[in-house]
Length: 252
Image (tube, rainbow, N blue to C red; front, side):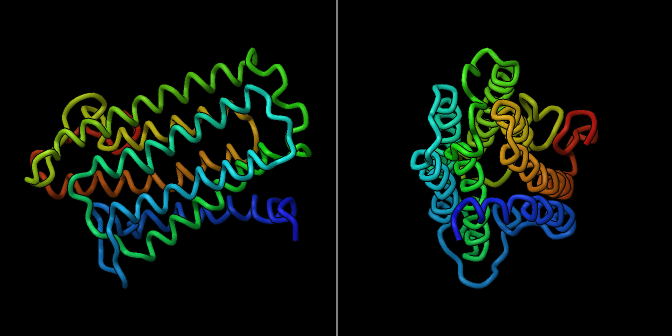
């Protein structure tokens, strides 16, 4: 079975699986981070995170670079943005976490599966001459590229700055605190909000099915988790702001 057949076989079922996961995650919180639970063998949270996240850029880069598509400058911008995001996520982020908890091996394996499939469908599409054709020739001037890039950079800024605020609150090992600045005034999880915006920008920029699938999966995963975080904050802190939403300012 060749990779083109695999791509066509999994792309639409992958959306259906994402919808199912979205519904389930409102009732079962993924057991890592502050919601951590012992589920079978455990491993270092820091190294588990690195292993599971680095799969995505490696898989994406493999299929993008080795594919037979003609790589336009615009496509190398897509490549750089993907690699830059995951360099921060898989290398910089975990080493800035001072007190990462151990995580279940099954959680790491689940994340590896997601990142493997997501990296494959996106890298394979951009690397395939049959799929790309001339889509990204003279693409810099397109509204999709310009608007998508602006949205991506905006989302990345929100995501990174929100993480920075959390890091600053956890410099001392004195437990969780209520974040108060930046978008935390309005929502409990601006880091997740920023990541959704980021990949929405990428989807607009690349304007293909795998990009759309990625942002949908980002929503399917992060919206229920943000709701769980929000509930956790409300239960832990009696003084938690009553008008603060979970992930979308003034709405959700």
